[in-house]
Amino acid sequence: MGISEDLKQTKFNSPTSKAVVNIIFTGNWMMQQTHELLKPYGLTPQQYNVLRILRGQQNNPITVLGITERMMDKMSNASRLVDKLLEKKLVIRRECPQDRRAVDVMILPAGLSLLEDIDHVQLAWEKNFAGISTDKMDQLNEILDEIRNVFTNN
Image (tube, rainbow, N blue to C red; front, side, top):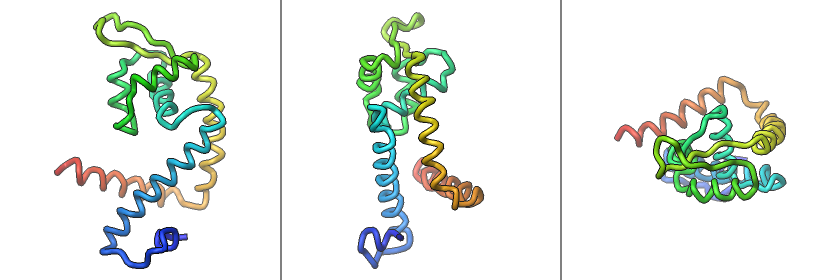
C-alpha cells in the first residue's frame, strides 16, 4: 500500500508535502516494528541504541555525554537509560579517571550476548527488504542524508 491508502488521503499540497508525511509515517511505523522486535528482550529502542553504542566502543569506556552525542533519538535521557541497563546488569558505570565529575560506561558480557541474540533476529527481519535492490537502498540512504543536510546547512 502507498501512503495515500494508508492514511486514506488522496490530496497533498505538493509532492514534497506527501514525502514529508510519508517519511514521518514510515519512521513511526519502523519504530513500532523495532518495539515489537525488542519486546521479548525487555529492551526499548533507546536502550538498544545505547547498548549498540557501547558495543561499538570495543571495550573502551565512554561517558554518558559521549553516549548522548551518538544517540539516534536526541530527546533520550542517556543517564536514565544507562541506569536502566545497569539494573539489568548489562553495563557497568564508574567514575571517569580523567574527570571525576564524569561517569564512564562500559558494556558487560551479558550485554554483548544479548546484542548477539538480537542481531540474529534483526538480520532475519531485514530479509523482508530483500526485494528492494541494493541500488535502491543506496539511493534511499542518499536521499535521506540529503534531506537532513538541507536543514543542517541552513
